Image 1: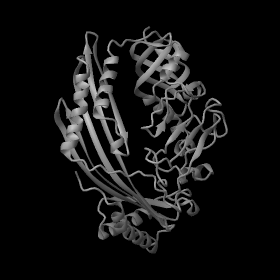
Image 2: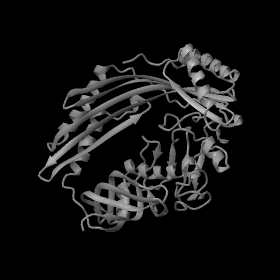
Image 3: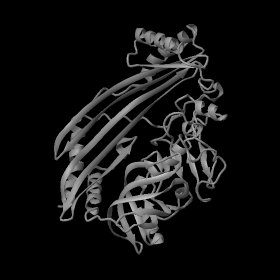
Image 4: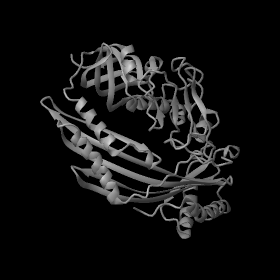
Length: 448
């Protein structure tokens, strides 16, 4: 395992160098400048059929320097953090900025929005695991899957990954902030086979804290259970039926909503939610909150990619769109102010009801449970949605049989408005925290 990060020592060593670089940029003619630095270390191991397939150590770092000459912008990247290399990077950026066309919206986020305090969100929990230990955990995971049922005939392997990193951002407003983080995961994918054919499925867990991971045996057995449950899958008749998306795919459906309210899609007018602020998009009972301040969560951060302080905000309140996801550039293009959402998506929390997935089946009666989606048939400009799908057919409130070789289709605006319920089975491993998502009716193309 690579040496664990010492975040404070790195910050102490790098901060003066980066502050000097920003000061030099101003002296050499830049009206503003910013630096984003990332350092990542870790390992990943894949075991297949009990043997080590791959073992990789990671040690990556990269710095992006952006300079502005008025409203002309240039960005240059480097992995060399020596003073000489940083000076050469600055020279290159200044030269490029002298040849780029100005854009009145290019520039830093407003100085008064910078994070004044860096809250400790408990994101950094390094795992000093050795390669031999990682291999053993992956082997245990795969072995549990292969031993779970005699119909598990093959394996695509089990993978353990452990990473920790440091993110640092600074700009010529005088802002410099940094925070470390960690991410650990264990997954398994196996193949079940019987007279009906072969089916593959997987399961995983991912946490900031290694001790919070599910056991290798639990992950392996769940992967096997899911693969076996898909044996005997067949299409269903074509028609319009209720659809429930399992939590592991429901987050992907909601991600299309976040894409539609991203600033770059809005100012380019390539979103079906352009000019929708203040309109009802979801049912009146539904609320979606963006919260980047949840301790240990996957989408937590003390400030965004432009140094803007993280804060909670409601994107959807009582079904109505209350806020977009904007960085400073897209906000300027829209005549608005940044919402502090430059960079990665923050945690999204969906309101939900008291019913688990089985109870939702009872309420639905007959319809489709989607557990896997294939293809990329989503048009954010129109909202048209068409994806290949697999899952289970539900009749009389109970799972009747597995389903494959079907397509589900609809329009995202209608799908969001037609959400009947969100289950209490919330998947908290992901940035988007959703339970099973029940949509009133979609078109299912199966047997002719």
